[in-house]
Length: 101
Image 1 (tube, rainbow, N blue to C red):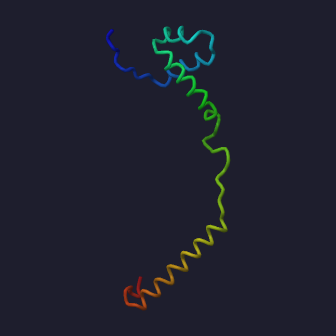
Image 2 (image 1 turned 90 degrees about the vertical axis):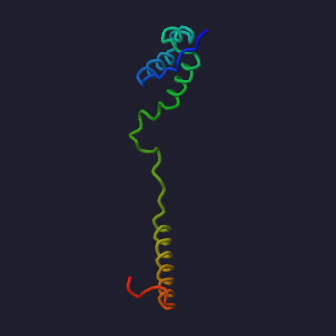
């Protein structure tokens, strides 16, 4: 039996097959014959549709907003600024950094 070349299906076709599998009005074997794809492909497309179905209804925003700790971030910025100023002063006194920056 000769092997067929690998098929690349468009997203619309995949959605059509997955929706038909979710409706489950017919068996996987009948769907496979109808759409000319293997039953395992139909199962994979159905599972992928069911896993990603929640993403269709989101507005592109995550379910929970990211937690931002503003006080901690300001403290870190202050710490790094203090360190930079200290090192710049020490390097200037040692002659390794010019006074003009």
